[in-house]
Figure 1: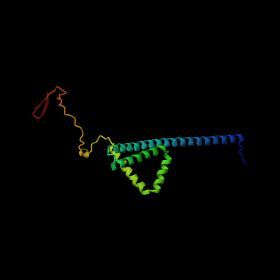
Figure 2: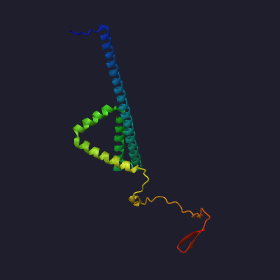
Figure 3: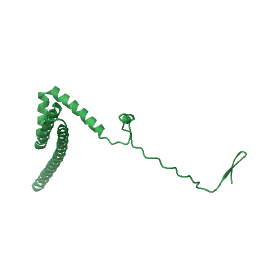
Figure 4: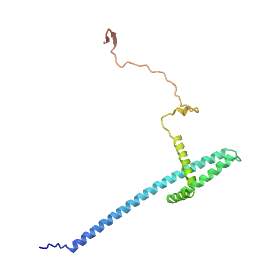
Length: 181
């Protein structure tokens, strides 16, 4: 006995159409999630880029101020001005380029000058570490913090307050122990 199953063509078409719609929905959802994640990464990168540009600009301003306080014709003043101008230009470059351009430029520079790039990275890490330690406002006081006359402020002593007993019962010594009386 031969058993054959005949399916309704409209049922098959309906199932195929439903499956295609499900696949399209999954693809659309995946694309939307990808775009959202990409936008979040770009936002974070732009925020970090802006923060870095502001920090570099702050260093440039500090160097400019130091140059202004020195004699106008001194080599130190000229060096500080040159560094300040270079850092200000670098800060503007960071602000003006998008993150992918900056990453590509850094990568190209690293390929062309690996020793300079690695040395600069080490120097930048050391500077960042020192800056982090200098701005740490922890509550602990290190043992060498008194070395340069940086002793913490001392509050004036106050008169001690009298201690009063919280109970009225007295204890009198007796042979073999105390007598609660």
